Amino acid sequence: MTLYTQNLPRWKKEEVAEIKRSIEEHTLVGVVDMYGIPASQVQQIRRSLRGTARVKMARNTLIEHALSDLGGSVAALNEHATGQSALIFTNENPFKLFKLLEKTKTKMAAKPGETAPEDIVVPKGPTSFKPGPIVGELQQVGIPAAIEGGKVKIREAKTVVKEGETISKKVADALVKLGIKPMDVGLVLQAAYYRDTIFTPDLLAIDEEAYASNIVLAAQQAFNLSVNAVIPTRLTISAIIGKAVREARNVGVEASIYEKGVIDLIIGRAQQQMLAVALVAADHGFELDEATLKAASAATAAAPAAAEPAEEAKPAEEEKEEEKKEEEEESGMAGLGALFG
Image (cartoon, rainbow, N blue to C red; front, side, top):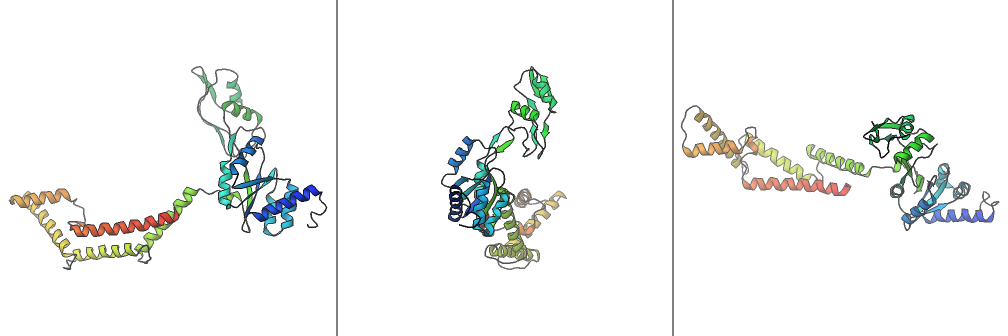
């Protein structure tokens, strides 16, 4: 017991002792805001968190006593214990806890005097209301209501309250009548203490899909950089060698270097060029034998004129080899995707 708590009544000392014990028994303690949560929803939240996290409601002064008694970096949570605070204890990491608490939130109607968490927009379209005083009530708060086909209709979408502004009684009443529930009600994590570090919501609100996509994109860019800059790694060496083989083969074909693995491509290119010349000759009145004319026509139909010579007329073995190399490259990227995705 410290000097800070020795003058407290017995029941308060027991509360402080329980809070301190719970903090020491868990890897994470968080401060949550309980404002505006109905008792029925609190019980539902407790049930949904059972086995994962425990919520402890206590007076802010007792929370302050417990945290101050423990001292160290955990005492910084006192700065976040404002309003209708409670403590939450868990062995999960703060990112998982934040995600769990976000799932406990439900949409509720706005009350006069509350602050809009985001722009509140009344959508365009028909309503279920018949003509009556409702038209004037909606128009008074800036909602462009009119009567069409015997029903009240909102002529165009209208932002009635901007993020951060206070919701007036007239606006709140209009939103209730329109069935618009703009308020997220649930446990709001103010801060979490985990492994000697304080985590606030701005650090924990992560778009997981976008984050994973960025990691995969970075891995792909690193893979491409490694291949193009010829920086060999375990994942890129096959792609680098495959690229070098293809480039060397292209040089061999263009320079007519008669080596194994290149000679067939050189002959194939020469044959295609011969057939192209034969077709030009035929267009100028030269007669071709039937076999040559048929081969030239078939070659022209099969290969686009802009195709690169080094990529044409590949033997079956060469095609299989390149397919294998491409599969190896793809498997390398798939491995990166599995690692980061």
